Image (cartoon, rainbow, N blue to C red; front, side, top):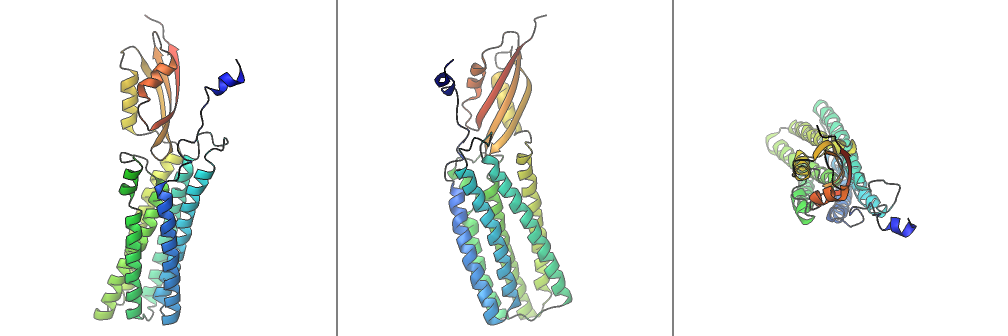
Length: 307
């Protein structure tokens, strides 16, 4: 067999990872907004002598770093999509970015608990008017960022409405800006309570409440992203579809099925089929080829003896 004949049977392993995702574009915009807001809050904290604003600005800086990692993951996956060293493409870079972002979320939550606990013991003087003003601006910016990274909207634009393993990288970025929006909202509530009702302890208490919610989000994303990284068996829905279509003739039976995610809503499968008179592997593949989520299918057949 000539080399040209072999090449005609070969295919690339990019699986769409070379395309610019809307999640990448939106994350880039949010990174710019986050950095801008960080500079404003740090400058305001220094000018107005507000430790609360300065702390929130540094908090925004940490999230800017995390969002930068998410943006880097998108660009890395796209630029290395044709690298043959990645056996199943670069789709899992997406999950790795999400996993890293989830860890950083957990770290930020721990820092928030630590700082809030210190403020309960040693309260600091707060420049309420300036702090509330900048916190409101922060809430508006973060609220816009949350809408920009809305997961359901992004999945709709990328035909991933029915995704079980969505864009983990986008999910991580979304949770980071959602965490910022939450802390801004809680900060406003706490600052107003402290200014008008003298409840100084509300500021650190809201910090602890916010950190608990953020930590729960972090655990959920860690669980979801780790399932992809560790090749957890794919959704039951797709497994059932494969079994139904492969075994429709009543003779063929699936003896072994491996289904795992290699990217956002993108799956690979290895299927072992036993039959008295097995069909060619390509014919079995055609039975399930209409499902766009399955991009790399390997079929092996075995003949069983008739009784």
